[in-house]
Length: 151
Image (cartoon, rainbow, N blue to C red):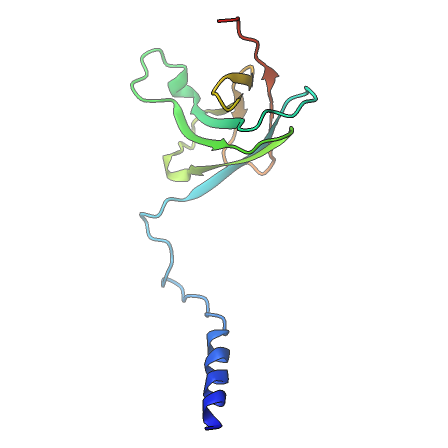
C-alpha cells in the first residue's frame, strides 16, 4: 500500500521534467513555414483626450511600388492589423509580416487611422510613413485630427 504514493510522486516528477531541445533537423521549420518579421511602433496624437470606447486603430503596410502605379492590378496593402480597447495616446502596435512576401528591393510605407466605434474617422497619418520592415528601431506615427464636413 505504501508503494502507491511513491509511484504517484514519481509520476509527478517525471511530468515536471523539461523536454529536451529538438536535435538539429528534427522539428526545424520546414521550407513552407513562413518567416515572420514584425514592424514595431506606436501611433500618437497630440490632442489631450481619451478616445471613445470602441475606438479602433488600423495599421497598414503598403507596397509603394504598387500604390504609386496607375494601373495596379493587385492591392497595395501587404499587411494590416486592427487594435481595439484603446484609451489614451500613444497606441503601441506590432504589425507581423510574412518575410517571404516582401521584396528585398521593395519600397514600403505604413499608414494608420483611428476610428470611433461607429467607424467614423477621427485621426489619420497625413501621409504614408516610409519603413524598412524588420528594422530594429520602432516606428513613430503621428496621427492628426480629421475634420470631416457635416453630412
